[in-house]
Image 1 (cartoon, rainbow over the protein chains, first blue to last red):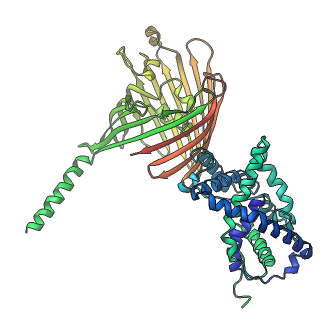
Image 2 (image 1 turned 90 degrees about the vertical axis):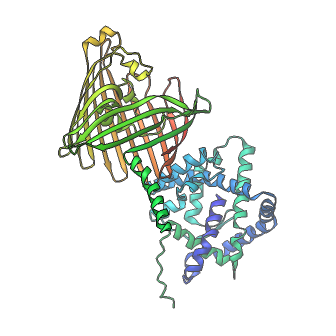
Image 3 (image 1 turned 60 degrees about the vertical axis):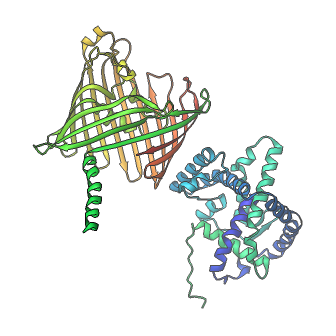
Amino acid sequence: MLTYLRRSFLVSGVVVAGVLPLSVGAGEYDPLEGFNRSIYAFNEKLDRYAVKPLAKSYRYITPDIAETAVSNFFDNIGDVGSLVNNLLQFKFEAAGQTAARLAFNTTFGIGGLIDFASYAGVKEHPEDFGQTLGYWGVESGPYLVLPFFGPSNVRDGVSLFVDASIDPVGDVDHVRTRNSLYGLRLLDTRSRLLQAEQIITGDKYSFVRDAYMQRREFLINDGTVEVQYDQDF
Amino acid sequence: MKKSLIALAVAGAMTAPMVAQADATLYGSLRVKMVDTDTVDMDIADNSSRIGIKGSSELFSGAKAIYQFEQAVNSEAGAWSGGRLSYIGATGDFGTAQVGRMWTPYALWTVFTTDIVDNGTSGNTGYVIGAHRTPETLAYISPDMGGFQVAAAVLTTDTDATQDDEVANNASVDVAHVAAKYAMGGFTGAVSYLGYDDDASKFGGSTYDDVTSVGLSYSMDALYLGARYENRDMVAGDDQDAWEVAGSYTMGNTKLLANYTDDDANDDEKWSVEAQQKLGKQARVFAAYVDHGDDSIGNGVELGYRVDF
């Protein structure tokens, strides 16, 4: 869960952040800034001294092909949640393609290790429950930094419980296997962010916050962003 | 001078085989699947491969002579695997008349409405009686008359030995066959009747008195729905009813399919869900979950790849 949020916010949040004027007053959606900043500082420490070094070592040790296989594996597992949430948003075509992705990647892709479906041209449609709520008009609520999980907001934070209940990794009965999977997924996600985070400039906290909030909006609208580029100039 | 001669020679070499090819098409479809179910363990099997030749030529009257010859291929054995089609005929504004071994109107108009998935449960109810592809058949299919078409056929089999299972099911049975089809908009409805001759019993091969089938289908944009019903009037014992529904939804090169069959000839209902993906114009894969009920095959997964040419 942590993994999704962090991945989604940074990887393309950064892209959006570069495009959108960050003109909205931060106070409007970050009334809890004081609280958030302290949690943020905690997460940063955790990341700097534990998660990031681990991710770097993981990336250093593991051959690229194995890293890709691991990423594919967790993406395939993530498609289970995407399938459910596409259905909940009545996006039946996207749900159908996600079902096809699951069928092909789990079989031809050897348990998800190979992203066969993408080679064959079946598109990804990642969706989580926070996006589903947003799609049906639930407001995001104030920005919220969660311990361990990172940037979120009230809506998406609550949705994590639903996402966790759909997550197939949670259904693995063997505790050590399950925890190993959680750990590996964390490493996978963090290592995927190593390059993206280099773009961050200025106050990291507000950069991440703005990127996250805009990224979520972007995802909920399926990439349609209503921006009038002339209004700020 | 020399150049143009070479050009002519090249052009000649190019056109000569073109002329010869113009009316004969070599075609085929090689299909392999892997089946893993309760009782079948990772079996790599053939999935109805075939290779054939077909074509047509002009008749003096302006109609066309048509022919098709198609062999089953067992991709497991890497060998020919018996005859599928072998017929000749004539087609024109009067309709189509053909004789030989062919798909019957029963198959074309009712069985194929639900025989749409690539896995082993496909069109299950349509292959029980064994009248989908028949030898020694004489058939007439009318032209399309404002969406309406009729067909009539005689299925004759004599006592000649045949190696083919399908035919053996029907050994030495004479059958009169009529069928009608109506298509309007995305809707198609068809009825087929097969009446088995009483004499058939004297050959000891008759199971059915008559078989009536109905096929309905509806397609709208990417959605396809098909349904099929068949009633088999048995020589001995109770009538058999068979139901089958199937549907598909196409999204670009991806297709999702599902089917369900309930046939008195089988102990259990069967169903499957399947995803197909075109990898190119003439290649596709499928992945399916199949449930054969409690019969010998059980439940499991089928994966397949096919290449057409």
